[in-house]
Length: 332
Image (cartoon, rainbow, N blue to C red; front, side, top):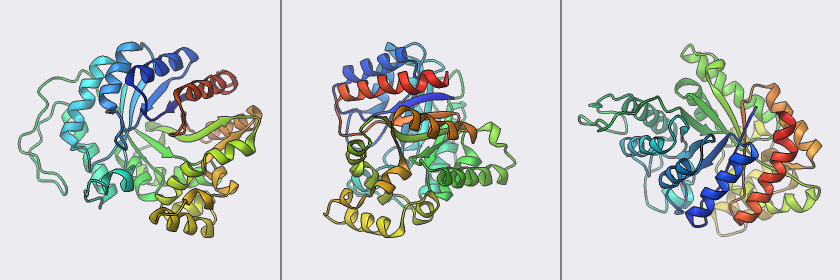
C-alpha cells in the first residue's frame, strides 16, 4: 500500500513546496496538486516541487478537458516532468463544474467522452506522435510537441460516477476513485472499473487503483465530523444519484443537499454524520486502520488523503504527521 495526499495551493508557493518536502520525509509516496478553482497554477507548482524533492511522486490531480486544451496540457505536464524525471503523473477529471467551468461560461457537456478524448490525445503527444485528426470534441492540424518526452507519463482518470469509472478501466493507467469511504461504495466503484477494463480485454492488474478520500485520525470524532460538512456537501452535490445510492447516501439527504447547493443556502447544514461517513474516514487510529485495511484487501494500491481546502498549512502539516505516524508506519 502506498500513501499520498492532495491539498489546495492557497498559500505562497514556497510554503507548499516545503509541505511536500516535509511529507516526503514523513514517508508519503505521492503528492497531488489540483487544477481547480482560481488558485496558484498547478503545473508551475509541480515544477517547483520537483526541483525541491527527490523521491515523492508528483501528480496533477486533476485537470479537466474544458479549461485545458489537451495539447497545452500535454506540453505543460511534459515540462513539469523535466523537473522531476520519472516522478510525474497526470490526472484528468471533471472537477469544479460550478466554481470554474460555468463561472467561465464554458460548455461542460459530454464529460466522459471529452475526458477519454483528452487522455488519448495527451498520451499520443507524449509519445511524440503528430496529431492531425478531427475528433468529436477537438480538432488537430499537424500538432506535435516540439521536444522529446523520455518516458510515458502515467495517465489517470478520476471520478465516482459509473460512466467515468468504466472509462478509466478502458483507457487509463490508473483510476482515482473520488471520495468514497464505504465498503459498498468501493464494491460498486471497482465493479464499474472492471466492466470498462473487460470491454477492451484489459486486466484489473494493469491499473493503479487510488482511493482519494478524507482521512483524519482524531480522538474527537464528533468535532471533526462537523469540520467536513461543507466539503462533503460539495462532493454529494456533484455526484450522480446512481452512485450515491450505491455508496450509501440516503436519497432524502442527497436531494436536500443538491437543492441547497444549486441555490444560495448552506448545503452543509443538510449533511448528516452518515453522509460524512460515506465519503470520509474519521476516527481514532484503530478505526482508521480498519477502514484502510479493507481498501488494501480489495486491491487499492494507494490511499491518498484529501486535506480540507479551508485550513492553514500548519494544520495540514500536523494532520500529515499524525497520519504518517499512526497509519503509514503501521502498514509499512
